[in-house]
Length: 221
Ligand SMILES: CC(C)(COP(=O)(O)OP(=O)(O)OC[C@H]1O[C@@H](n2cnc3c(N)ncnc32)[C@H](O)[C@@H]1OP(=O)(O)O)[C@@H](O)C(=O)NCCC(=O)NCCS
Image 1 (cartoon, rainbow, N blue to C red):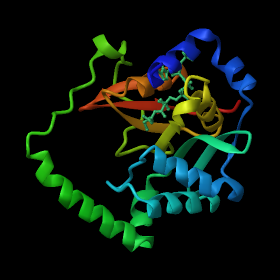
Image 2 (image 1 turned 30 degrees about the vertical axis):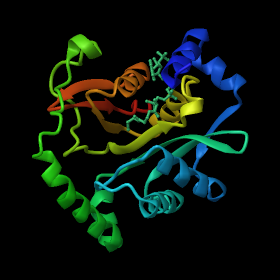
Image 3 (image 1 turned 45 degrees about the horizontal axis):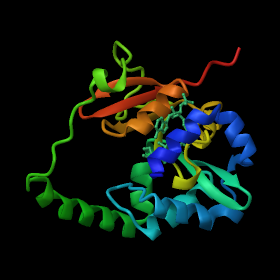
Image 4 (image 1 turned 90 degrees about the horizontal axis):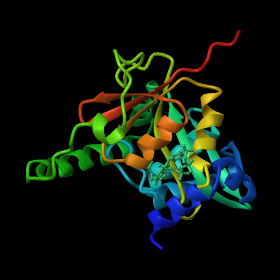
């Protein structure tokens, strides 16, 4: 069965929380013990930031999470890391490039190399379509990517392919959502991610050729 087929079969088999429990999946903040495995998962899932995908980037993200510059929660099954979510304040983008000039140069290089391809007839990204993705929220979004206010930007959420369909990403998000307002940008053709954000209750707005997802942390009474 294909990866997507087995993923769908697991979804149809029952509630994600039960599946997650029976698979022995636990959610925790990143700790030193799991830093290397988490960086390896980011590598496997080809996480991109500043236009870069590199081992140095993933090691930097893991180190910054351990120093609590950013918020990284991981999902583990046994001693294996099977999912991760990473959020960062808006200031992280500039401060990271100032602190890590190697990453800054790699980012500039990646942008310069990517530019000719953009004009070489690459597939145009299509705008989000409510007929495909379900209804979007109306009115202006309460936060934007450029002006997120107190919301932290999602750098990445992802689950290892063989752990998908067990509620891992939803559980990672629920843990993070208790503590923070959050904002994410999702490619319009990333239907699993759009469904994930909708299923955990984020507000969704079309935003150019991406979907903007917003979660506002409930006020404490
Ligand atoms: C998107 C992704 C994180 C989902 O991870 P996951 O652990 O399989 O998701 P969950 O099992 O927690 O599913 C949560 C919800 O998302 C929906 N969903 C996620 N993937 C789906 C899929 N392939 N097909 C149908 N629904 C899907 C489910 O409907 C579920 O909602 P439900 O509880 O109402 O059934 C995973 O597919 C992934 O890692 N993709 C590659 C990385 C990526 O694109 N990340 C997002 C962009 S930063």
